[in-house]
Image (tube, rainbow, N blue to C red):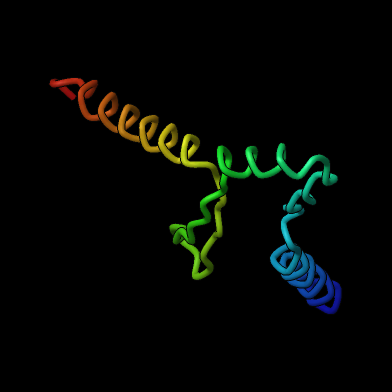
Length: 93
């Protein structure tokens, strides 16, 4: 009985420790600064746009930062996937 209780407590603590971890997601540090003209051109072309998105099944939200080109590509891929999924359903199942 005591062994079963110790095992359950250990398992519970292990699960809680896994939930409390940060997930290992690291935010990259900005690159070393070079020529200011080059940096200003690069930031104008590749300006990051950050959006906060709700995650299904979680109370927490996720901040995602991408360039406008990456957001457009993600929207296109999402529309394409949904379009393919809704059109490829078998009719006799």
